View (tube, one colour):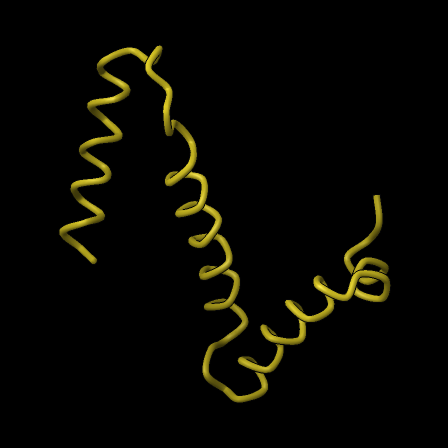
Length: 77
């Protein structure tokens, strides 16, 4: 497994993503803490949107809980 710096040097897509994030920091649009929070939240949103799609074998309580989360997110957005 490559270190983040090694991947930055060898993977053009990863390099571009890091540079985009750094440009937001340099432009003082977000603080480093905000960038970490945003990255974490983006991962959570991604996982939540894909976690149980199409799964019919989940217990009804789990499906109900995800429906509540979906409804909450829809109202907040």
